[in-house]
Amino acid sequence: MPTHTAGDLLRHWRRTRRLSQLELAGRAETSTRHLSFVETGRSTPSRQLILHLSEELEIPLRERNRMLLAAGYAPVYAEPALDTHTMAPVRTAIRQILTGYEPYPALAVDAQWNMVDANSGVALFLDGIPADLLTPPVNALRVSLHPAGLASRIVNLAEWRGHLFERIERQIEATGSADLAALRAELLSYPGGRDDPGLPEPDQAVVPLRLRHHDPDRGAVELEFISTMTIFGSPMNVTVAELAVESFLPAGPATAEFLRRRSDVEKMG
Image (cartoon, rainbow, N blue to C red):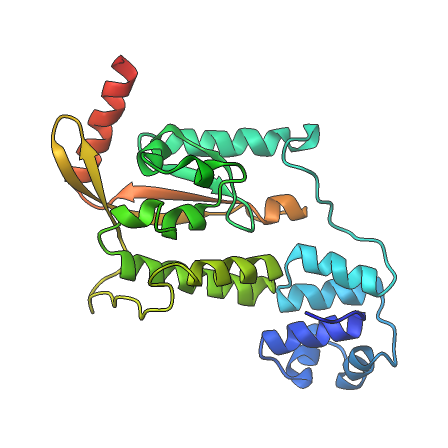
């Protein structure tokens, strides 16, 4: 967004949310005239109005801070580093969630899909991944779609790739993140990145992840997962608002049994 004033930013987000000035003014219980004056810079919005309009437009907290700064106000939402003392309860909560999913894989990611924590089950996905892709910060989407990463083991790669691109497209539209746009461009440069995705079956409720895995005892096996995302409700700082936990649950009894047996072997060894 090559914009600088609060009015420019407000106009951008209103158009992104596909609302007219009349529609936004009605939702925010303000006049269309005043909203127009704010967007054109003829009127300086109050701090309260910026926060109210941001809520109506569902603007990410990071961008709400940006709009406040553009209008000459101090940011409202803090952005503490995850490893600081004040974020200890959040780190504990994430660790509890990840541990609770074991033996099923689960990982916590930030707004750019960089891994900030993971449980022991994720080792199944990282098996055989080259060291350069695992150098921090480890990006979950890069590891998934890079030709030297997990992509070579994904049975339904076209379908899964299409699913991931759909998710990142929605995230870019919701957040306006230039970093995510750059990541999307990188992912599109990988082999098959611009191919049409494989279409799910007509009665398919979710897009599964089908993964080839070599088991020392059973040889080649195919595992099937469904993924879910968990976010914090009513986050009050930027860091927490941009965190998410993705878990991979077995899509059938065979995968569930394999993961339980694998976990039991690891505990014994």
